[in-house]
Length: 353
Image: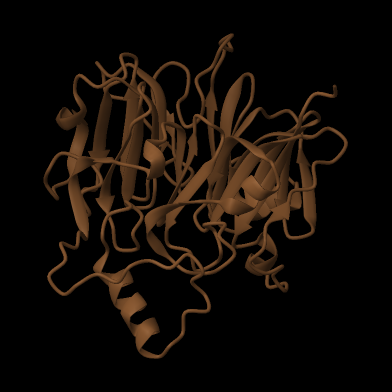
């Protein structure tokens, strides 16, 4: 029997739309693997960097540009940070899309001697982490032993060696998980999760998520679009308006309208333990700007939050404050292995039978 093949499927905003070309619509799209296949990817809003067997490649619409000599990427809409064996550099986005990384980069950091097992970006060997916009580098305060670091729009989360989480940066939407809306200049332990070892951490625009070693999902921060899977007043009002005009065509996964005295949550400043349908256990989590996606230990994908561009994968452009399984993947017999959210997109790595 042949081994399952890996493929990447995209839901949501397309790089064609970002470049002004006609978009392909709400349906799922398969990423062209090329002769070497796709191993990993790093999405921005208007482009994505993919790792193939031949190295890194930047894609935007029909554009394809090789980035030879680099191992990892950290993209933004202004700059692209690249890490190679002996160093890290930041280049203007336009130069990366032209494939012309010549002259002096916007930022450069020597990483010699190269470590045998470098930490994943944004972390850099020797302490500190990269940022895909000026000043491009920040020191990691002493005492924090990071095995993974993730960046939101205004905040930073670190998963420590013992499974603890530290958070700092902007906190006005509760995204730090400290129970307040205050900002923090230095890493601070998320005390509500102390004693619960975590294996995954993710940062959205202004919300955060983590997965425990037991497969439990915790979320906190901004819930304006239902990205925490907690009751959202804005979405309840949208559903009520749709029912008033009899327009439910864009919402095949109908959700119960909230009553006037329902307990809506706009900001969740402490981590909340979420109960997913059928009490499924979670293995991976990723956050977009205002949506969330998780992979279960059974290889299924659940999504919720902002869905204007079809990034939730349910065949519509409705938003949701309730987790829903992506039925397209189940119907196709696809086992989900990985999920990576861009700002308005969801990239899913699946195993094909």
